Length: 266
Image 1 (tube, rainbow, N blue to C red):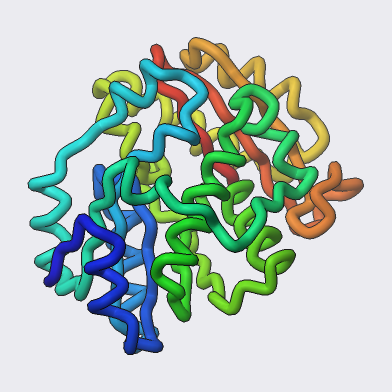
Image 2 (image 1 turned 180 degrees about the vertical axis):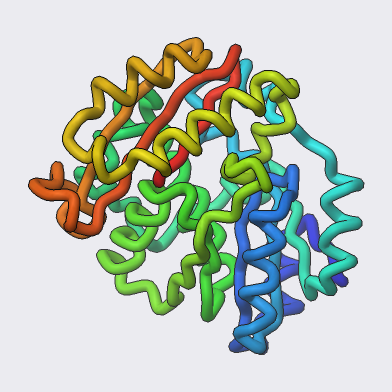
């Protein structure tokens, strides 16, 4: 496993490699990330993982400063899974050059998380675009837990005719049903229990609740959520409210347990 902190040194190393699977992360690696690494291995490609807590996608400075970080543990996990390259840029290294591609934000960026996290998706697309220009990977491997993020990155890549192909992986969950997330490390046992109850309630009642987000909100509050950003029910293709429960739809939710914000789509 080779570790790089300079984009110039990284580019010099990988310039002749045409088959790279890239997994961008903010560290705090968990089973969801490991599924991405395994998927990358199945593509018979060189695996490149970045660890960078991107300040531009945080609309709350305290959230950025308190984001869980454990580089030693992350590197141990990456070494165990025989990742080929690790990129650990600092802010200057990643933001000090002018990009070739313009940031494209689809109108979907104003919905769901975009409503309360102003500038979040612009920050996400900015950093992903920079990584793609530096690395030029064949594959970009992403999880479906961040559905909105995945959708917007796809739109940016299509608009700019970037040749990288997106490979998406299903949401990985803990045994209690909670979607794996670095932010789970900030939850205590009672909060994890509440998160599990919320997931299982939505999963078990999904098709009877397809046109009743207010009932979901009431129940989520009853189960112990401190705040709800949104509950939206959308057809995953049209991004509109489903007319029947036979459509392919998901229930999207963002809520707080204490000061920790969790998102899911079920």
